[in-house]
Image (tube, rainbow, N blue to C red):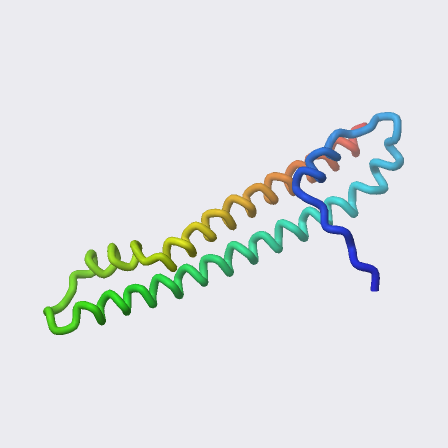
Length: 125
C-alpha cells in the first residue's frame, strides 16, 4: 500500500488561490483536497478530545493527591483542592497540550471553511 504524503496547513493555504488559466485542473483537485483537509480537521478534533481526556485524568489524580496530602488535618476545601491540582506539573503540561490542540483544530476548521468557500467560487467561474 502506498503511503500518502502528509502536507502542512501552510501547504493547503498556499493552494487556495484559483488559477483562472487552469480551471479544469482546479475543479479536478478541489474535491480531493477538500476531503483531505476535512479529514485533517477531524483528526485535529480527535486530538483535542484526547488532550482534554488526558487533562481530565491528570486533574482528577492531582485532586486525589491533594486530598490525600491533607489527611489528618481535617477536610480540605474544594478551592484548596482545585488550586493545588492546578499547580501540579502534570496538570499544567496537559493544559498546555489542550490549548495547543484547540488552536490546531481551530486552524484546520478555518482551512476547511476556506476550501469550502473556494468550491463555491469555482462553481461561479
